[in-house]
Length: 88
Image (tube, rainbow, N blue to C red; front, side, top):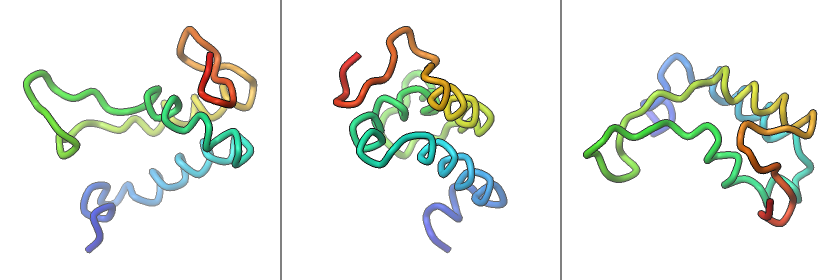
């Protein structure tokens, strides 16, 4: 069993589809320039007192789909628009 299969269980296909939708909302060059900013939009909150990448959280797939739609419309959830080059 892979890490992702273990982490997502039966929701792996849905998670992969939501991520693919978000990735497909930008051209590859733009995606590379803004990927971390996009991740900051949907990353799960880490409970207080828990550290590191191994902390469990809840990934909201509907939120990822909403962000993808917003990216396609030139909008984001953050106050600053995402721009190629990581600025904005």
